[in-house]
Amino acid sequence: MPTINVALGQYSDLFMLLAALVYAAAFIAFAWDLAKSSKLIREIDAATLASEKKVLVAAGSRGSASALTNTDGDELVNDEMTYVQASEKRLAAKVAVSLTWLGVLMHGFAVVSRGIAAGRVPWGNMYEFLSTGAFIVALVYVLVLLKKDLRFMGTFVIGLVTVMLCGATIGFPTPVAHLVPALQSYWLIIHVSIAVLASALFTITFAMNVLQLMQHARVEAIAAGKRDKFPFMGVVPSAGALENFAYRINAVAFVMWTFTVMAGAIWAEAAWGRYWGWDTKEVWSFVIWVVYAGYLHARATGGWTGARSAWLSIIGYLCLVFNFTIVNMYFNGLHSYAGL
Image 1: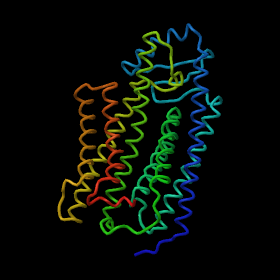
Image 2: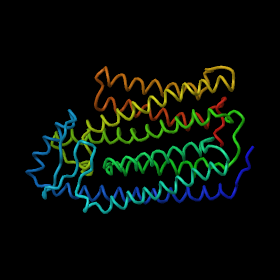
Image 3: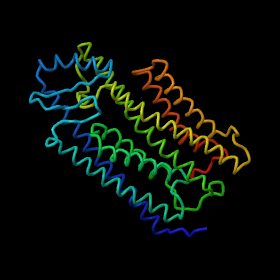
Image 4: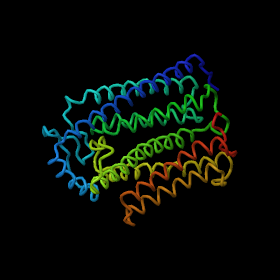
């Protein structure tokens, strides 16, 4: 059994905390960028606003391409999931992205050093699973930013990453230690790594679905002639575009979660001599699979689009959170190795 490197584990904890602070600063910068964008949107003249209302209503109902412009003709957002306001005016967004990259580098060092300190993969308890999951969310986001300008999602995605990392460091602090016997298997790498990645993708789609519901409510309010209470949502693509993008990511994450459940069953047979035993963790993993399967099926064949599909996806994510938190902390079973 490898020796625990306590000093390296302490460095890992330190960099995990520093990464959380940097992410918090990035969250503030992203929020400031949205606030500045709200001010620009309020400057749109009455004639342009009146014409754009019709476009927003149409985009919200059918997800077609549209664009919102200010009085200078600078495009703010379009429905190709692109944040296209003139780049030279986006100082706050640039600072936010730079801070996010810094946070990802520090976070990555913390995760890797944790694994080296323990002499194993760093996802053997709730602290490690949550911190690694938060790292995957942030890493996927910044990598996508290299190809597609999704800075409008920064406030929501990095906000979730900050909450996840703070939850890991404050709620589930666990010293570096060896794994319990049930986890000392190569299946830990196969089963849990895919579960972490699937959970990270579900987290991203959760943020998109929340934005979708907010945009949908905003469009309906504008159509009814009410005051726009969320002008910053003017830099967010239409509800239809958000829904389509979230659906594609959910489809990929669902395949990963299916593999997670199957790999878990194979691992259970190797460890305990049975594929399925109705353990609480196993049941809730299957519940998550059923909810997301229903979401994909309903949207693809049942015509469940708009707010209904968003809520079904959100319910699936809430089941995922329940499985990770409540089940791990309060339900005894063969999977009670959360490290608490």
